[in-house]
Image (tube, rainbow over all chains, first blue to last red; front, top):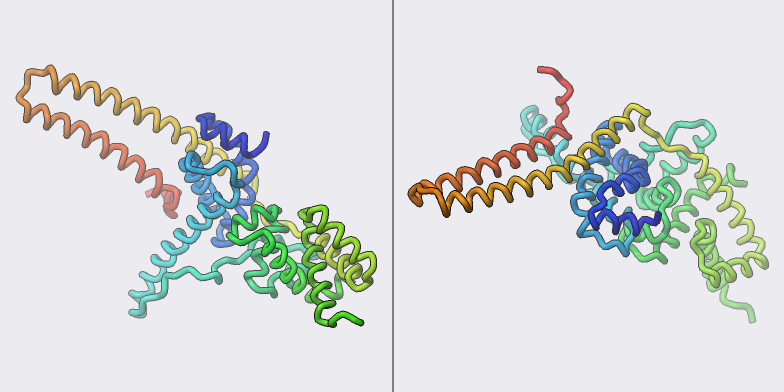
Amino acid sequence: MEERQILEAVQQGQTDRFAALVLHYEKKAYWTALQWVRDTHEALDLAQEAFLRAFRAIRSFDVSQPFFPWFHRILTNLCLTHLRKRRRVRSLSRVDADGEVRDLAISDEEWEPTRILEADERTAAFRKAFAQIGKRDQQILYLRHFQDLSYAEIAGVLDIPIGTVMSRLFYARQKLKKLLENELS
Amino acid sequence: MNPDPETIEDIHQQIQVLMMGHLDGELDESGERRMREHVDGCAACAAELVKYHRLQDLARNVRLQEPGDAEWERFHRELFTSLERHSAAWMVTGGVFLVLGYLLYAELLYAGLPLLVRIGIAVAALGVVVLFFSVWRERRRTRRFDRYREIRR
């Protein structure tokens, strides 16, 4: 059954169909959350909460659009809120210790896609090169290679035109190719 | 007359951008044809395409960390229970409010109590229901992120 048909069925009240979406996107959701938080348990909890929120808001979803970019936004916002809360707790305890207030803003530094890559000798060179390229390049490669998203889905997640997806992939892969020159020759 | 060298570079780059769509199976027919025609006559771009294919293979071998079976089991159990309860909660809420609405309507219209008392009863009854659901929903939300939920006090 196509994603659109499932979404329409859920919107019409066949709520049990939502399970199919969960099973299809649960790993992607987990990996998305794990890039923000370091803990498996927390990542699964955040993914779970994002599915619940998506379910509650499903009637407002435009079924002509792909589901994942919308869901990705819900999940990313949840992760950012979670990190802000966690940081607030930490910074409060630090205020007591040294009297200084820390910045609560969440930066891209918190986003760490290399966290989700499994340590494996065969792919050590790739992982090393991947860690060396910029976050912007990591992001587009991560969405394409590891999340296996289509260009339309990537465009939706990053809010950029499809043509830009292709050119950003080119620049990212070009950098990776230079770093892996020996392995690829 | 030879074309401007910069233009040649641009063409190579445009073709290599198209290669991305080719590698990912996202290129349309005309793009595919344009890329193929260029690669067939350009050794440099053909060599680049081979490297990009190898890079693709390398990336394919990278595995992502996955939680254990027990973690997935917990994830499914909790999520599907919550989804079921969410639907059930709306039904219960709807039913309770319908019944309560009817009872209040009947009580307000037909009971022989003074008007002020009847209004008091109605407001208090509504307040109890709203409080009940508010506490219940808050508990459900906060429990999810309670770091100490597994600690027995």
